[in-house]
Image (tube, rainbow, N blue to C red; front, side):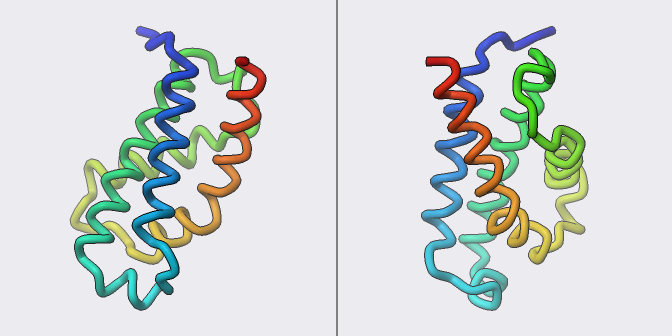
Length: 114
């Protein structure tokens, strides 16, 4: 069943990416790895990002080119179902390397939506 609110999902993605950026701030990986509160907050916000991405995909994957549907779906499933095996390094790298790319795609999509 489609969720039919692409702009809302796009805004949810941006909001949660912003919050992840805020939580991580100027931390390096070592500081992140030692900070349980920040890790928990980042993982939760990452779950929301991945859920919003999956909802966009269910609505119309062709409408939002450039999003790594499989990658975000896999990350979300892993965070939800394999919580005991989550790699701090993978979450960190996703936050630092992949989310900025996703942000640019989402910002373009929001501009396109008006």
